[in-house]
Image (cartoon, rainbow, N blue to C red; front, side, top):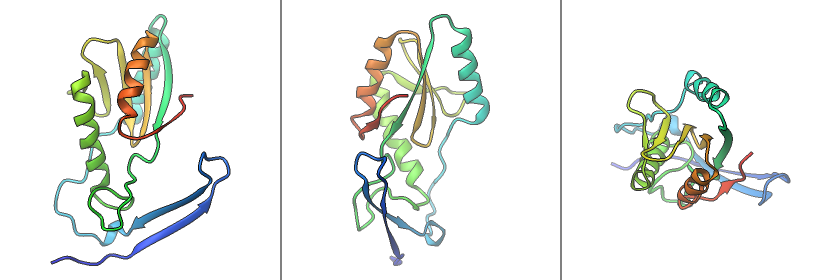
Amino acid sequence: MQRRILLRIVAAYRPEKDNPCRIRFTVGGNLIEYLGKTSTKAADITTIKILFNSVISTEGARFITLDLKDFYVRSYVEIQKGMYGLPQAGKIANDQLIKLLKPHGYTECDITPGLWKHATRSIQFCLVVDDFGIKYTDPDDVTHQIPTLTTITPRKLPT
């Protein structure tokens, strides 16, 4: 049986954004009964600190951040995939990310959740929701990764 959940429409003016007139749809995730897996691996503070220390201690290493714009947002009124507020939104987004990155040589580390590496390049990154912290020594590694990620969604400029 399908259950109806109220859709909340949030309109805001954010002059600092590329598109300052913003409308977001959210649903009450606490009211949704979803029996599938909803959690996903994300880097914790220890993993992030280790990555920072690795950048500092690796000669020639650099660090950038990358934010995938609207990674969780999909434009559906009938919810068919992910939407803010859905219990499974993070899992759906993470599954899409794994599927996208694997053919390009990126895999999650077996032991450290949220830490990713490339099979042949000296690039690592940690992931928290849609924010990437990227360690690299060769700028070509970053120019390889960014186009791969932006096939999903636009990105905010690295900082």
